[in-house]
Image (cartoon, rainbow, N blue to C red; front, side, top):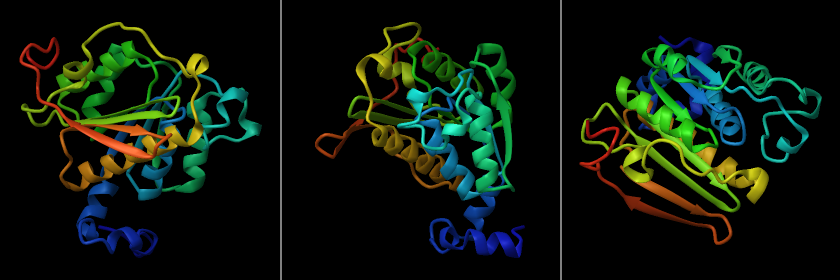
Amino acid sequence: MLTDDQLLRYSRQILLPDIDIEGQEKIAAATVLIVGAGGLGNPAALYLAGAGVKKIILCDGDQLENSNLHRQIAFRESQEGESKVSALAAQLSALNSEVEIEVAEAFADEAWLATVLPQVSMALDCTDNFATRSLINRLCWKHKVPLISGAAIRFEGQLAVFDFRDPENGCYACLYGDGDGPDTLCSESGILGPVVGIVGTMQALQAIKLICGLPVDKKLYLFDGKHMTWQSMAFRKDSMCPVCAR
């Protein structure tokens, strides 16, 4: 049951026929795991906290560095040297004190994910390396937790939703394989700040749609920031996938 203050605070969302009071109540009951508190995790977390989710769990083992500030827009210069999850948690609490924030100041591993995933409504992969992406994908598939995956490098971004509640949905490994692979790092190839902002914001949008029961396409979305274009590619479950075809 929403309070009068909540009805006022979220009134612009509630006005949307696709959200309404029922959707806002679903948002207020949702717990979202965000793995990675950097360029993608910043806007995703801010918009989910702004939307009024019940709880956000943040997981990242990095500390804030000066070179992060051009794209990780939830942070401030005064927070340099702090753990990213603690710094981000402080900003989220300042934005919406009603949202419960839990932090794990460590890099996600199999044991931790296996403990946390049964508690969440969905997971957002906001990481920057293939091994961790593969691990999150495998564990989300195992626990039937919807996964929203985002990535960005240079001027390009990628976004996909894998709703493992539906056994016919494919997974990250259907597209990219499973296990270790070469990483393209921002520190080597560069990244334009608004590109990660766009992808992270889209992750939050897809999360809210999933929470409210709105349709989400089984597509890989590709963003080209130089030419301001989006492309989408439909994909199907791979019958030979090493993860979801088991």
